[in-house]
Image (cartoon, rainbow over all chains, first blue to last red):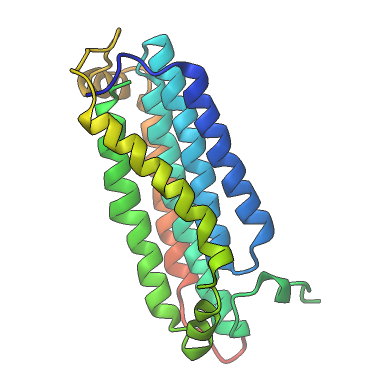
Length: 104
Length: 120
């Protein structure tokens, strides 16, 4: 079904495009939930770059690094959702522009 | 590229855990009628043309892969067995550090989800 070996530059081009999409999403969006989703897209793009590099050199290290990135993404999204719920409880909004002061 | 271990892990972790977290968070936020009105304003033509074009291109690629030629085995295939043996061998410390990170995330998320007290 699939061709033998996708060229590395195409994989890296896809990873760069996904990373740019996620980065633009993080910078443009004001709703914190969408910012977290765009961060997940960026992490996925980095994982794809590692997978492509691991396939290019024929080593298992690329997939292991992808597993570490998945672990990081899982821990980060759980903390991020917890912080999101705290912001919603205190300020009744998800707009990150309302968080522009520090106490004290 | 036929990285089976990475594909299975991606489906398990992303579709099975992280997206479920997002769905539960959206359910708990309970945003109400204001969010529904905001989303109704997003159904104008200028918004969905671009993503629809990209989705049609993606659908074409998927169809061409499914219909396409016979399966040619890649040059060097990395089996899940190799990944597992590397995880138990040189990358053992990384696995332990990953488990510590997940425990820290668990405890942190538990404390962040506490209800507000009087002095907050």
